[in-house]
Image (tube, rainbow, N blue to C red):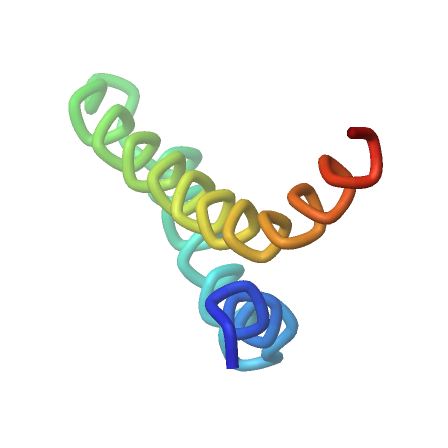
Length: 76
């Protein structure tokens, strides 16, 4: 199984999607329910939230890599 296929499988896995979403909800709640003067806490939660997005995007890029390469060869 190629890396692209493994990445696609992971992105379509219900447990993985549920885990990612629950972490994102956790960090959103940390941001929205933080004390007014807890700027540092909100910033840390936002950094973690964005890190999850970037992690999922990197997996998506691996999954799309084969598709992009196939299209590239068709153009040439």
